[in-house]
Image (tube, rainbow, N blue to C red):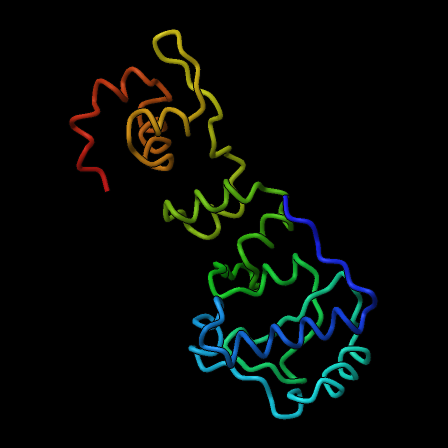
Length: 196
């Protein structure tokens, strides 16, 4: 487990954030350059001066437990497009997020999960299996089976999927089709190799 880097004070931590921000956008040798500079994301001229960035940070709710976040993930690092965010807010502001609009409310799948108290895995499964938005968010049906017994052997769906050599989602779909009878899944395995 990696230990968090300790800083002598907030100014040191902000300076490190500032350097990393500049490097991501301007140094083509930086490991994250493809996700920032190579996509055309830049740092505004004003923030090339550390003191300006530092002052902005202090005036915009900086604390040591937050990280810099671009509000528009395709926008630049500039005062009107940045904020200091916690981990949850950061993770809900990523290009890879799935956004769902229901009853005139748009949230990420993770936000819907927290809002409705439905597991994220269940919502993701429903989404990937093309359930309607309403059914996906209102269904009380549980979408996961933790363990399945076959031939006196009880394993998780993931373990069975590794043994069979198919994805966990495909195996779950087949289990659901055959009433969670692993024997029927094996009996019909050859017929199902063309499942999409």
